[in-house]
Structures are given as structure tokens and as C-alpha cells.
Image 1 (cartoon, helix red, strand yellow):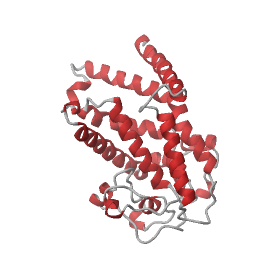
Image 2: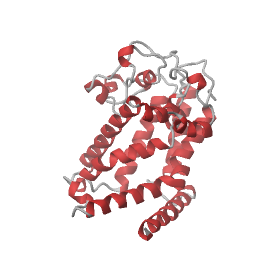
Image 3: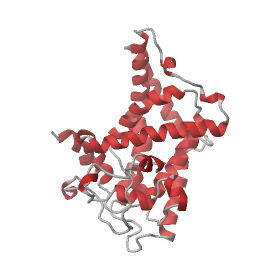
Image 4: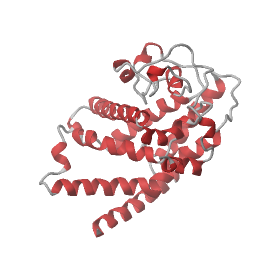
Length: 294
């Protein structure tokens, strides 16, 4: 038990140190704080300069709630619990494997550090994105998980910051299901993670932005606003009741598994879910909502 308490303590102190260095600009390429700010400002500028829905206010409905979610989920949540929980859970898992004479390294099929940079980044990115695509489908398929995911789908007007409106349980679910796939490819560096992270954040911001983009023929590879808005549609056909267009970054998974759905321009469709008018409107009530469902 003492070992796990030490891991939790070190997780708090290490992340607090990292966060301070980020804000004080003592970090370079791995500065997620200013990286997120820069990407957000650039995409918001695109929204204001080239709005798809021209009658949508710049400070749209839910804008400030989304901004709070963005910083809470990316920084405060890590400080409060996520880093400590992830590190201690990983150690518990490794200790359980040790009871049967195994370690996490036994799952590793290759060391991607031995690959060229481009191949290493591509493999890491594809494995992460495919795992997240399946996880996203699970969030829609099972009611217990859907109650957490409703927070994200409570957005009524799309904008870049809606990307990061999600319940604090979602990162725990995603991280848990990513653990083994990432262990299999092992050996990725902090720089690899940062590169993929910033690319995914950029695409995710654009997916939710009030801009009319589909990337031409690249729409079959990358998720885009014209595709993702249908993921947030309030009304879908009965045979699509568990959702469509689950892509986070790569739309190719939806085309491969036939979950793609863009019947016409979704510019003015209603967003949300059934009975969303009864869904809580503030951060605290949205946070406790899933735990009150039977």
C-alpha cells in the first residue's frame, strides 16, 4: 500500500511541476497548455472569419461552459485525479501480472522506436485512433456509458470548444481501453505523443467548428465538420439509433465499417438527443447526472 501512496504523491507533484512549467513557458514542443490555446485561437478565428451558420452568435449557446470544460478536462482533471489514478492503476495491473510470472512487456509485440520517425508516428496514431473509434461506439451502444457521453451531446450549437465538453469519466474509459493496445506497440516517446496529440486536437476542434469544410477527397480519411455534425444530430433513422459517424480523427473507420451517414447538408439540423431539454445545464449537475440514473 505504501508503494501506491508514493506513486499517487509523486503523480501529483510531477504533474503540478509540469503544469507550472507549461504556464511559465519553460517547456517547448510538449507545452500542452499554450498548444491548446494556440490551436483554439486559430480555429475560433476561422469560425469568425468564415462562419458556416452565419446567424450563429460568436459567443454561441454554451460557449463559456465549453471553455470551462476544455481547461478542466485537459488540466484540472489531470491534477485532481487522472494522472494519479492512471499511474497507480498501471502499477496495480503490473503487480497482478507479476503474480502469474508476467509483466506488461510480455504483451509487447514490437518496439516502434526501432522504426523510422514517420512510420512510428503513423503506427502510433492509427492504433490510438482505431481504439478510440471503437470506444466511442461503446459509449453510444450501452446505456450506462451513454449517460456519461450525453454531456458531450448536450451541445446545441456547434463550435470549436464543444470538442472538449465531455464528462470526466470519459478519459478514464478511453485510457483504460487504450492501455493494452499501446502496450503491444510499446516504445513510443513523449515527442511522439505530443505530435499525435496536437494533430488530433486540431482535427477535433475543426470537426466541431462552425466552418464549412470537408477536405475534398481527404474526407474519406479525415473527419470533418460536414460529417461530424451528423454525429450530433438529434434525429436519426431507426436503423441508426445507436449513432453514426463515430470518427474522432480518421473517418476511414466509418467508411470501412459502414457507419458513415451524410444524407444532405447538416448545416441547420437540430443537435442533441431525445429529451435533452430535461438534461442539466450546468457543470456540476452534468457531472453527477449519470450516477443518478438507474
